[in-house]
Image (cartoon, rainbow over all chains, first blue to last red; front, side):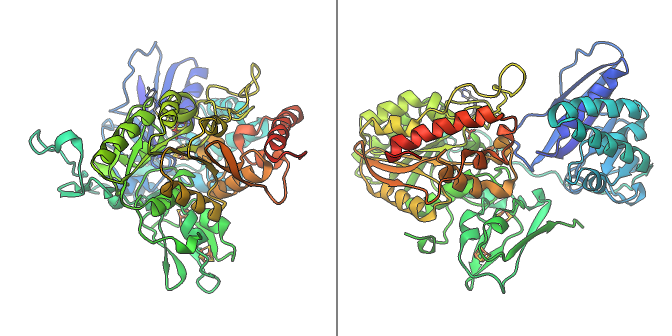
Length: 298
Length: 293
Ligand SMILES: Cc1ncc(C[n+]2csc(CCOP(=O)(O)OP(=O)(O)O)c2C)c(N)n1
Ligand code: SF4
Ligand code: SF4
Ligand code: SF4
């Protein structure tokens, strides 16, 4: 048996990728299961999905804690969490990035495959949906399934949902990724500090669990404490406000779901710590003063 | 009341974890600017509960409680009575999704309305059970694809029409019932203000487009609220003690098709299905505006 863990953000299609890969393995006569991790995650938040493949029936139902392969659909995730956690000794990580394997820095040096799945998706699909392209890279890096099986699985899975033409395009994206994947070794040494948690003992626990705003070793907790949760890294598109054009109407300020636009001297200003890049401000601005562009991540 | 009259103070903070482009956060943030600090919020299980806080973290800056799915109406009733006994005027507000209102919470809600409890009940309506992954509710419109009414060869999405919840609440003859859309800023703010100032039971019903469940680009959330009103799919009115006192009529009525386009949940619609939904809208239009659409 081998196990795969997919890391993505809600809405990027990690679950569909896990399912399509399971189908590809199944088409080659294996048993395969896949499932997402269900939490309170929303579109844009980090999420996980899993696939298990074996030549006999799979009875184990738990999450995958010690994967053979780790797939990362969104490069920003490798900055904030150790995606290698639990990866088996000879395991491989497959990352969607423009960088070469040798340029990627992780917690330890491991076998690493990279591909610009976003670039391929934009070229072939016209949208930055990377969950099919990345499967081509996975097939290439692991050699566990044939690219033809991946293509067929994608056609079946995505074709059924989005129409034949779209299925074919997605299969093409996987093939291109398969051909462009680079395999090498990542750098190691990146340190991740685990986020401290608030773990009060029974005497410190407020009656009824009700807490006002409190400063703890885990940062602010209680009323209004979500201000310390910076959601800016969910973003793929970023708004820029042209202050010359801004007429100070406050529409963007009123409508922004994050409440992260403030009015400074009569002009709108975005707090990028929280902006999720939804594009509502740009769409609603009557003066067309806001432009959305693809964010270039450092 | 205009958006320029709103304060800069935020009582529902950034850092919440709603999907990008969710319709609900701007609704609660702006409504809280009108309700003010002396407010207590109750929420049953729904998206707002989850994205508004994960213990011990919270986006709300006022006292905030989570109760069971079924009993929003009962909880806010009891809390309001206790506060009034103490001579406190604190605003007691329950906010529930459409699942928690149309289906699961309707008995407690109806009871609270019947007893004319001194509370505000808000339904933010995203037309399905979104928090658990898009299951149909009594609010889901005809034909919409959800995970429990998938559009396929057996059924073409939801078979039944949307229930008229605001009318059910109006029939309770409570002091105040209003339907709202955040795209209609002034109307939205005026109604929130009125709800704050009236005594007795108040029911606010607000359309809350959901890019994830309705499958549209997150930049279009406000436009969806606007088009819902312009097509007649959503109607803006106010009622006092059961009498309609104010109806907003769109300046130009757009065909329902224009609203459906761009929403993945309606993608499978045949011309016959569009016609069926248009028939439903036209019927409602005539009932509300007393004239042919
Ligand atoms: C009694 C009970 N049944 C089921 C659930 C699971 N549950 C949690 S949130 C939710 C969906 C809520 O839907 P809705 O009220 O429409 O709000 P939304 O999430 O769409 O905003 C469900 C079914 C629960 N918490 N309690
Ligand atoms: S909507 Fe446009 S014009 Fe209005 S305040 Fe925002 S940026 Fe300025
Ligand atoms: S894109 Fe605009 S509306 Fe959306 S979160 Fe960012 S600032 Fe707010
Ligand atoms: S699923 Fe819909 S209602 Fe729930 S947080 Fe996401 S956009 Fe908002």
